[in-house]
Length: 607
Image (tube, rainbow, N blue to C red):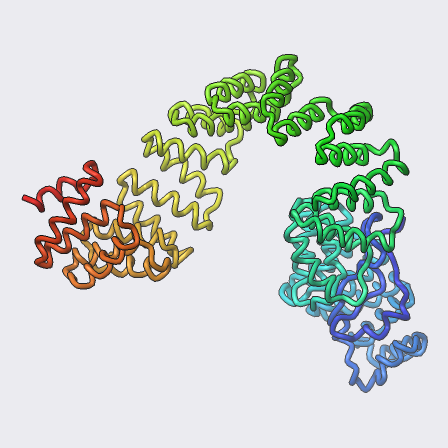
């Protein structure tokens, strides 16, 4: 099958010079729909309608007076061999006559005369793609983007399609996203291609954001757009919307087994189990050996609470290649969801005992054991899994997390370090390791782990905050201050970062800076008791007793059970001359928490 698919030119002529016109050919993968079109706005803006040399150009194109236009272009070139405009007109006409090789030749002569016209390079790329000269087409389109990256959506669209055809999906997604920038919501075109690729990446929410408003605004919608949107909706827990989209796809493709199966799945997810059973039964009748249909029939019966009716379909599924372990896990899930975890545990234990269990069986079994209140069994199950799968970072990660959840932080650190050694750049592992190191009191190690996390995500405020806070806990004050300042360069309104930096500034005696930072934290967060406490305490230390009492009083109202706030309020009251009220607050704070870092200072206030 040819890479290029051409479209009826008669319908396209009126749009040649319109803001969102379309070109006649689009290279797409053989599986792509036939009416996915690029938005070719402004591709032909170099053709000047008002040019004395080409009067009535738009009308002539609309009327298909191509030979007359070619003759006029050749006449102009006879008089002026350096007329870029004439070559552009000539190339445009050749494109409309489905002569991409001749079009490319004309456009090439145009860019040879003026190599700084991005739209002419884009047209050259289009012609070369139609001629299936893909390497040269890519070079021309890249040149168009180099000359005008921000406004050359046509080149981005074509590069997206070219990369999609080649299977370079990362690059395809990048260019298709750029190619949609600035298009109206009524334009679908390559949005359909982008939606398809996003679905392959499980980026279903983005697919919905890209397609749904365009489908609603478009006058005509290619059928495949409905199928792509329906898939994204189903996977995004919107089964009722998915059902409508599948039905719309089936209007144009009534015998589509994928569409009918998707409809059955959407009906089942929406709780319409009788309707889903009817739809799935119809699909299986037409396709009795289709594995996906067998599995869906089993799912419908399981959701209806009919295990015995589901079993024959699960057996057929196994005969056609579905893993028996997968089927047993599904039955175990059925029992768990039905309120009988004991049966589920027995099924999973049998799989582990006969050495057929995969990693997910062990983790599922461990989860059930923990849910039943037997944490040690859950740990033991994962330890057994680690012996069977010694190179699995996932098993080590799960075991480390369970140990941490049970308070065994040092053991957790050991397993999480092992997981990290097996998969050194997984931020999930590093986050768990960091938390366990912090709980285990390994402050310096936690700093190093936080530093590694930050290296993976240098512009992420969350990871900047983690690193700064770990430095603060490790009492590396100057480094912590620098890290918090780096955080605030990235996220100036990060309330926790502002608050913590204010605390560090207070420790260094820089009360003026502390007040300013704490005030910004309060402004960024609203009425947060702890940030009000920091501001009140900074004001107290700076000598502004009235403002201090106002903020500390408000903090105590918001969080009356916070002993530190009570102590701060008491100390500020005493400093302002309210000895009786202040002493009562300090006594109350000590009664609430007699192990706080501030307790000795509080006791001195009472002496």
